[in-house]
Length: 524
Image (cartoon, rainbow, N blue to C red; front, side, top):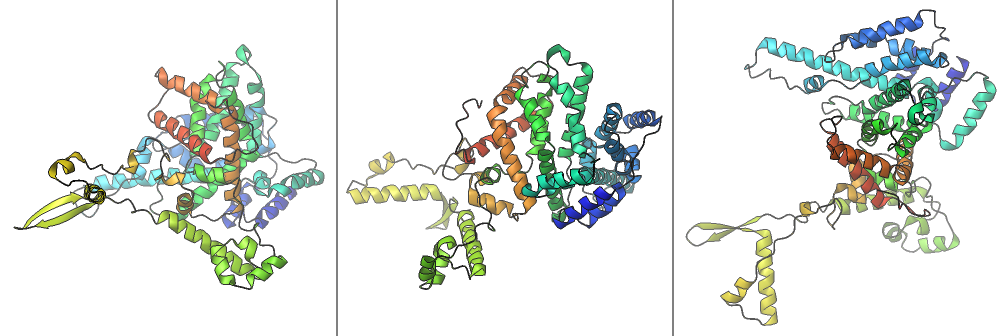
């Protein structure tokens, strides 16, 4: 318990654990758990009870959430009894059932709009709808609580430290305490070592079930999101922050490395059954992420590191027209060191001007209609593109001295302006989409460059680089074969998920910094 308290104090210094997390950790800071003789049998009874639970309402799961069974019983057992693989696997089965996504009926119930004022709906129906909606919201809140418990578990405190102090802190902790508890995710990841090392017929059915069980747990945790924020920006912001912390944690606990291992050999007979599950994990991992921001995170310099350096030439040049040079030129060369606040203000102003220049062209290609009034009270509508094209041809004919009779004007067919939505690929033309413009992507995110955000983007960028170089071809080929033969394993929406993953990696590839690398000729 001493090592756990010191680790939480170090996490508070980095502003990762807030007041809610302290209360959560107090619930999880329990003494060492020693399982009794019938502990495994009791866990199996709990698993059978959860299997009989209603998939739509989940009353047993909500009751276990009220009793805090996961935070006070199951996870401490996993941490203290990591040597017992049968016990850990049984708890993992229970966690997979508790963290599975809500049913479709519950999702629809969570978004119900109650018609109370019109009086057309019976009161009994409204009461039933209120019960359904409250139950769905309770399920969603409980899932978010489970995700927070996993991500901000006391054994994961080191994952949210800076990169240069992570190794040092691990060495200090191993020197201070001879018995250091492993991370919660690393315990589940270690269960995959033996099954994945077996190939061909040596991999048994039990090994396949173990791999699928651990992957389903990771899939469930990644897929957890608020059911309906009801316009609350705070809930959406908290959900995004928790998802980024989960990405950083999966990077530190080598979960992304496990996905790389499975993706490299997904075409083998013993791994081909994991392709659709791997597709779902990729979909939820890259959910609500901008590929342009992820690709540019490796080449962008944080504002705090680009501090202007004062030289004699810069000081002499800054005396004359300092205000003009701050606005029009880079502050890194002409701003003196004494005016650090002015340089930061000038840099923010220049970034704001650049963003406004890229975003303010929203209606630059607007094509409307022109109303022309004619004698007799008649009106005619002329499209802007047709009117401008006719005016352009008339002006060019009169300028070149050509005849302007009816035959000549009839030969000119006005060419309509090409609509930017007709571009076959995203970002193919000058009027590219939102995610292919750097300035627009910055304006869409509008987020502060916090350490967690930067680390999550860097982790995704590194994962995308390795995945494209080693796994993209085999994974996409395996998924393409599933769609080609119309496999019965496919579900509704899998085709959309597949093309969204393809779009993400292609968009990332356009902006990725590939300098210093050989080539990716094997990319499929």
